[in-house]
Image (cartoon, rainbow, N blue to C red; front, side):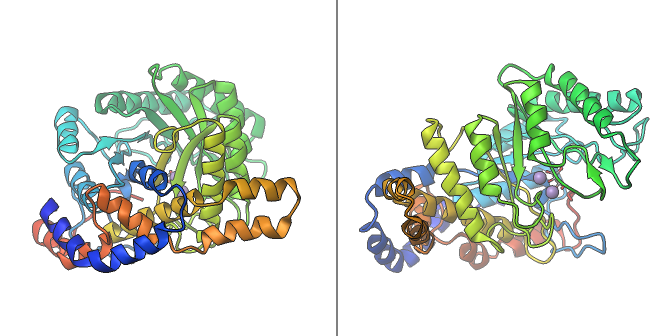
Length: 424
Ligand code: PSV
Ligand code: MN
Ligand code: MN
């Protein structure tokens, strides 16, 4: 299904009075309001193809109904999200969960909806029915060269699919690790991973990147071969300028200072981008901003400051993507909430009084430095996000419009109640 622009405009019209009052009140206090709005309007976050259905947990899965049954339907769902918020103009595919054999028609469907393809993701953490060797004991780090070769080949195949879709990056997350002390030789595992990644790296087209994700635990619970940003950074440095480190917010031990990691990776030109989600305990994959919105804001503070210092373009110079899963909420509503949360954190970071913060830091004025950050964080910037969405042709309030026009009910009518989408 597609949402007509007229429906969005009509609903915006209904909300216009209150919105305009709130926006004007807020805008009066923001010095460079046009610049803030311009940046928000240019900002987009990719939607992962695996987040459009109910993920479930290892204890069960409860379908929400109307879930996309094919890649075409996943693309249609991203079209719905983007029509509502005008900030989700790309989709990230996971192969072989999505097999774009018909690349030309998939590409034209996406472009009809104003979408393009973000990074392609490889999968060497599951065995596929037709594969020769098992990934039970890992893939790119495996002790057996034949297993490594198979995993390398898969990644090269994923690049080829991505080239047909005009993606520009390969995203690699490995489940490789060990469950018990003694199971692995750490150096051997790391060395094998590096050599495997080198072979994949050599197959990257000139204008492509490889994004290397890290994660400290799960599915292995003693060691993960790319377990933290140091290990990912080491690999991406050794590989070369097309390689960088991908930060998934849920892939840190509790209380890790993620914003500091972000700041240093950015400084070194090695920040590939993000998988946004939120978590309280581990890799919970909860809605962005639902647990730790202040942390999200602090990350965006580092991003705005660091990207401006390096002359980077906010909208395009790093990868922005959601990596969440949905067990009890409508996936589309959840994704809309996530994108809103990201834009709120970004808007808050954009309105920080940067010169005053620099002065406070230079004078070791700790209290004022904290005040400056919290002043921005405690500002309700939702009217800015709404205005940016409206000016881009989206909705002032995407979730309430999604409910009002009964999108899910229509999807259930079209696709059925007991549907299963591929995903984590
Ligand atoms: C597993 O932790 C994971 O959530 C990683 O974050 C990947 O990005 C994602 O799956 C898809 O492979
Ligand atoms: Mn991830
Ligand atoms: Mn994860």
